[in-house]
Structures are given as C-alpha cells and as structure tokens.
Length: 317
View (spheres, one colour):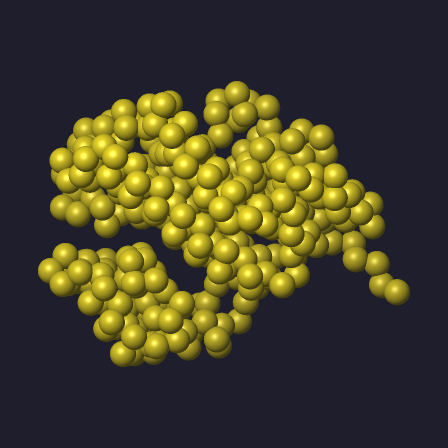
C-alpha cells in the first residue's frame, strides 16, 4: 500500500453563522495551525462587523491569511484568491504548521482545491455594458437572457446573483461559448495536499435561522450601521456610479444597510430584509455543500467530540 505523504490541511466549510470561525480558531491554537480565510467578504477592508471578521484579539492569537486584501471599490476574483491562497498555504507548510481553510464561499473553495476553468479574463468594457443593461432592465431580465444562451448556467445561478450573472454573460459575449461549456472542458490543477473536508452545520435548519437572527442583532448592537455609514462617506464609494453593484457591497447585510441609510426602508423592514437575505445565502451554501460528497458533516455545537476524533484520525493516519 502506497503511503500518502502529501502535506495535510483541514477545510472547514459550512453555511453562514454555523460556528466555523470559532472551531478554526480553537483547532489552530491546539494543533499549531494558521487560518486561511475562504470568505469573499473578509478580503475587503472596512467590512468588519457585518462580515463577522475576526477581532484584533483573534487575529493576534493565530495568524490569519487573506483578510483585508482590498478596499471595497477594488475588484478581487476567485482566480486571484486561488493564487493568493496557494501562496499563503505554501508559507504555512514551509513553517511546519497546519493550514486550516475556513469559510463559506463555495467558488473560492472550488478555485483553491480544484482549480478554475481557463476562460476569458474580465473585460471592463463588457462588464460596464452589462451593468448598464442591468441598471435599465434589472438583473432578473439579464438572468432570463442568460437562460437563453446558457440554460445550464442559468439553472444553477440565482436570478438575484448579479456577480455570477454578469460573469456568465461576459464570458459568453467575449467567447461565443457558454460558461458552462468552459467549465466542463477545463483542465484543473488540483491543490497538492491531502485535505480533510468538514462541513459544519446544525441538522435543524430552524436552529441555524435562529443563530442568523441572533448574530445579526449582535452586529447591530456592535455598531454595524455606523460601519456602513463610514463606507457611504468614503469618497471612492460616494463617487461610484453604481456602488451596490460592487462585490463588496453585495455582501449580505451591507446592501440592505446601505439602502436603509439611503432612506429606502424602515428599521424593522431593514432588519427583516437583512436576515432574510442571510437565510437565502445559507440556502445557497447548503446547495453547494450537498455536492461535497467526500466531506464529513458535524454540528460543532453538539458533535464536537466526534469532530475532534475525525481531525485526530486524519492527522494521525
């Protein structure tokens, strides 16, 4: 039997508010690890409270990577993430420590662990044209347009997921080929590690919904609206023609807070809309996680002993 001598890593996946960050921090402290954030909101500076970014104390306890890489008005792609994450992982392994990949952004995990399709790069003129169309007709209309040219991609992209709709249409317009075709035929460069995939989530969806509401109320109490006021006051965002089209401000909670501070909703309505958007995000994350057939699943609140045993067996095997 051939021994698998590849370096090891632990991937903590799961929906929002499932307790991934706390488990990652504890494992990193106990096992000599460093955390690589796999979260598309944490890469942006200024998105702290609403993105549940690690506190200064937590950042001081354990090295964290891929946090605060960009300003909210700056682009950052999954391909860039894969390059940056692999560089961080190489450094962690060179230091003799354990990479712990923690987050809930499925596209980032896929880019890192499996590689991305070698498809056309972003084109600013094409993106601007698509954004202008969306401003005039709405993203639902562009989703319908996508369904005509690429029904496979449209079936797995939600009609409100502006970023993915834009990218799928951009690829089609630049190449004349649907993005789903590029993805099927891609040559993927997999991460050269032995990875233990752990999905952390409560078995009862209602329990997660309760945690989502509790966490959002805690964010409000911690000053989330003041954080968004500061974003709105930044010259770069104030001057942007369509700030809510930026990936950073499409993060759940931020769009709803931005609109509320602009007078588009009442306080109670804002809270309900933000919580509903977070639940929708969790639903999409569960859909992605169902495809992770090689992952082991635990509720970190009630099955921590079993989770720790799975980690110990992986590292000792």
